[in-house]
Length: 119
Image (cartoon, rainbow, N blue to C red; front, side, top):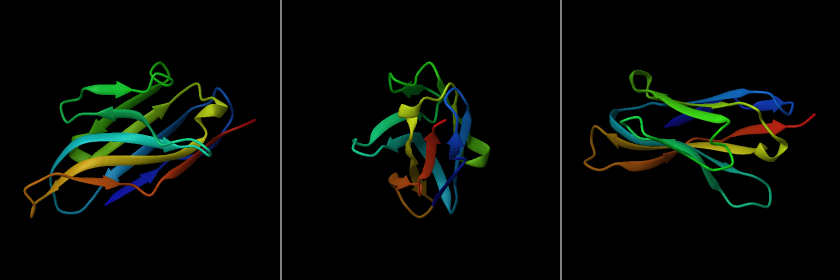
């Protein structure tokens, strides 16, 4: 299970920090990431971070957003700075998790958190 939090209403130029914690019987977590879905648009990858700490970003956010993870807490974060109205979307966290009773990694999704950038 993934539990996301941190969304809300912010003015253009403002900042927000999203968090997403994985829970349950976890053996290992692979890549973690954030996707977003805006009205009338397709879901897009915002940022992702590997278990080793390598990161990748969508071109539209790479100089404004920072993804990080705390392996001890099974949590991934997305620090969003200099927010723009076009960043308005529902943000979903994603993680590849291997449970203690499983051999393979499976894809898990959080419930989504709404980010609204508006004056």
